[in-house]
Length: 407
Image (tube, rainbow, N blue to C red):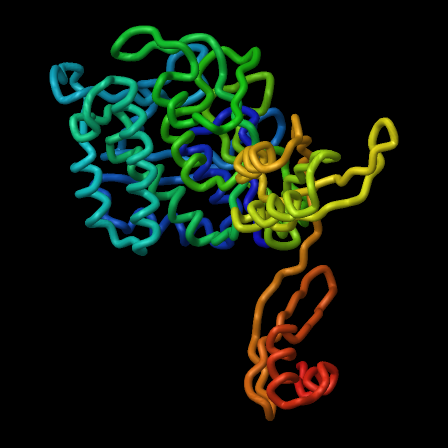
C-alpha cells in the first residue's frame, strides 16, 4: 500500500507540511507554477532550500502583494505563526478578516479538482468548528484572523493539492509535539496548545516537552486531522522518498516536519491484535461473540486452546482489527464475553495487495481472487463459485477448478 507517514517531532504548520510534501513531488517547480496560476489575487508561493541542524529541506513562503503575511506575527519563543479568530463584533485590530462564507466563495472560484476543493473546505470547517467552540459563538459568526487571509488559503490549498497529486492510499501521522508554555494573542495570553488547536487534536496523541512556544498551529492541526487515518509510530515500509518542510525559527532540535512516502506492503501496514482468556463460556457463546466482532468489521477473529490456572482448560480469543477500530472492538469483547480485561498489541505486518478478476469458463463466469506483492503473485478461484458449478453440473470440485484457466 502506498503510504505517507508524517513526522511531527517539532509540531506542524501549514507551510511546513507543504514544504515536506513538495519535496516528495516529482515536479515541484511545475506544481508551484500551477498553484500560483489558480487565481488567488496577489498571492505568490515560493520555495527555497533551508538548513536546520545541518539538514537541508524546503522552506515555503507565501506573499500577498509582495508582503509576507506571517512575518509580523512571529514572537520570541514561538516556532510558527499563530492563528486567531474573532466573532462578528468588534473587529478593530486593523487586520483582514474573513468569514466561512468568504472562504467558501474564494475556494469555489479556484480551478481545482472537486476532491481538492472538498478537502480545502473540510480543513477550514475543522478550524471553524474549533474556533466556534473556543469562542462560544455560531460557526457562521466566526471571522478568521490570519487563517482567513489569502496566504493561509494558499497554505491549505497547496497541502490539499499535494495530497491529491501524491495520491497516497493511506496517510499516517506520528504523535504531535504541540510545544509548551503560553502564547499571546489578541484576546490575551493563552496556554499552549491554544484552545482551537487543542479542540482540533482531540482524539489524536499529543505531547508537550521542553520547547517553549506554540509548535502546532490550528491550520497544521486541521490538515493532519483531516488526512491522517491513524496516529502512532512509523509503519513497516519500504521508503521511496523523504521530504523536510522547514520552520522559520532555529531550535536545538531540527525545526521541521518530515514526510516519508513508501510502500507499507499492503492494506493495513499497522494492525491491532486484541485478546483475552476465557474459561467460563459455552462454545455457543464464544461463537456468538466471534460473529459480533466480524460483523462489526474485525479483520479476523479466532480461538486458541489454552490451559489456565488450577488446570482449567480455556480458550484464547483473538481479534485482529485496524488501529482505528481497536477501542470499538475492545468494547464489544468486554460486552459479549466474560473477560475482565482485553490485552492490546500493535503490530506491523507484511500484506499482499488483493484484487478480484473474472474468468470465463464453459460453465459460466468464475471470480478469481488475486494477491501480489513482495515478489509473490498468487491466484485462486472463489470456492463459492466452484461449489455452485460442481452442484449444477454434477461434477467434482476438482473438475470445476480445472475448468478455470488462470493467467
